[in-house]
Length: 137
Image 1 (spheres, rainbow, N blue to C red):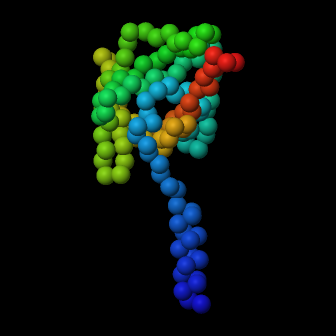
Image 2 (cartoon, helix red, strand yellow; image 1 turned 120 degrees about the vertical axis):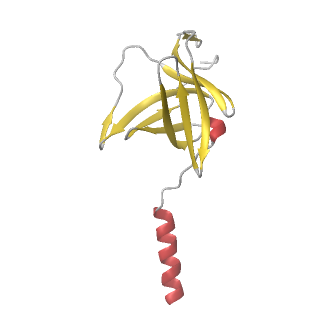
Image 3 (cartoon, rainbow, N blue to C red; image 1 turned 120 degrees about the horizontal axis):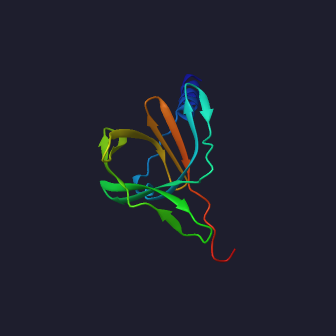
């Protein structure tokens, strides 16, 4: 009976832990901000111009560009790009950005093919892959 109790307790505790997934190879590509959380509140970006973050990687370095989707499925971008470097510290990944004007870092809390969650200064940034129209539609 005692062994059964310990087994049940182990299963319950392990199912309650937040399993952190970071598939670093999934970072490359387009990401759209879904929302941002800070101090328990959720904020959705309200902009008239839709912009995506585009990550291009050659591990552990890469560049980040802001891009705007065009109606024909292509993207417009400026020549400006922010360089970054990935760093793994113990079990955590960090993105260290460096632009002409500033340097900052964000911790990767979650990353798979469809979702990205970054943390910086007690803010969490939730991203999703943008819907891409195919040529058959």
